Amino acid sequence: MREVKRPTLLLALTPIIAMFLLMAVGSIGMGLPAEPMLILSAVVAGIIAIYLGYSYNDMMTTIAERISKVMPALLILISVGMLIGSWMVGGTIPMLIYYGLEVVSPQFLYITALIVTSVVAVCTGTSWGSAGTIGVAFMGVALGMDGVNLAIVAGAVVSGAYFGDKLSPLSDTTNLAAAVTRVDLFVHIRHLLYTTVPSWLVAAVIFFLAGFTVDATGAAGSEKIAAINGALASAFSWNLWLLVPVLIILFGSMKKYPTVPVMIASSAVAMINAVIFQGFSVSDTFTAIVSGFNNSMLPEGFDLGAAADDLTRLLNRGGMSSMMGTLLIAFCALAFAGILARTQSLEVIVEALLKRANTTGSVILTTIATCLLTISTTCNGQVSILMPGELLRTAYIKRGLHPKNLGRTIEDSASIIEPILPWTAAGAYMAGTLGVATVEYLPWATLCWTGIIFASIWGFTGFGIARLTAEEQKQLLDEVEQEEELATA
Image (cartoon, rainbow, N blue to C red; front, side, top):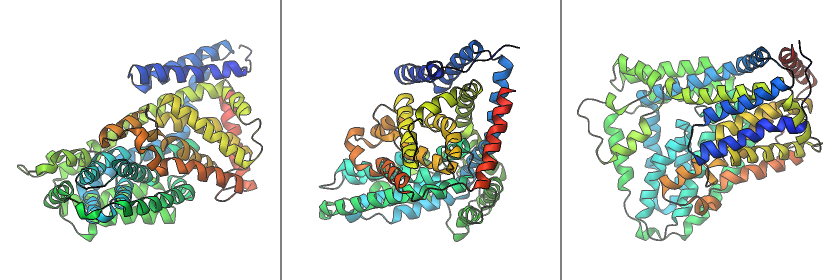
């Protein structure tokens, strides 16, 4: 047995600094995967843990405990992959995209781009996929119009894509935020409405008013959208029964039923739709929920026409295997966070961060600052959700604040900030995909930065802030105490 020591603030910060440097040099500078950088960060944290008197088994026990706590949420992530694959092969997502595109009007291009992209992103759970398909289609329409500002269209697309990604139960980042704060997925999504809906309404007003500056008389036809819809209508059959999987998810959310059974039920109905209405084989249907939908499953010789590339990017996704990358980075980040927790480094850091945070508003501001620092340094949205969540959850509970406030603030200041930072992967992707520089569409991607404003206002006014009852706080504090006892046993 060795005597263990409490780390100084410098020792506690060393693994964090190492992670920032490794992510900046390795992931950003050299283009290396984020997972090895996190493992190396965990090695640094492990060396410090040994110096403080902890053993290898101590660290492994704590890592296993951390992973076990978020395992239910990780199972939800796998279910999300299954759900996306089944909705694709069953025709639910293609039908929602089809009718979403039908509402496009050249006179209201900006607001329509926001609305349609929002709907598609909510249905698909992917901001990148929505921007890379529907967003590209809108940019193509904009290029054929006189007087249209491409930066405004790009801002509307990015705002809509991240609105949908933030509120979709299919989104990996939304699931991660719920997982790290240990809040039910649908409870987390409902709490996001307090900041996300006002931000979306502000964006809608801006894009609606901006639309009056466009001379609609010079608008060209939307050939790309017509090509996408024509191919979708030929490849799939539409009927109201295809909406049942969506209704199951909505009903389960309202009734607060367990997430995984609800998703399985929705997937089962979508798979039935795939066989009965879409004519896919049972083999292809099961393949879709494991490996994702693929255009090769369409009838032999079927031609997607001019929309082939767009539909391939949009439809070829989903499946449980598609979530493996997210699970891997979650395990690596939890290993790093577990070692920090074992050495009490997290407590030392949180105490320093929250030393002057005596009010709810200051706690929210501290969370925002932590997330902004993490996302701007690591340039990884998943890490920027996992690390602040692990660092600050206990502090919220001790102050009587429900952890869902933490999850919401993390999303307001990490995941949706990423696409407006030019040096992040999301910022580079959006600029390259939409053909507009990040700094040009940044002012118009209003949803991505107004969330921080509303989060701060609600923090200081108390509006939309969920507080724990005495019984809830005691229960959560007991759980935290048990975790700490296991970590130090």
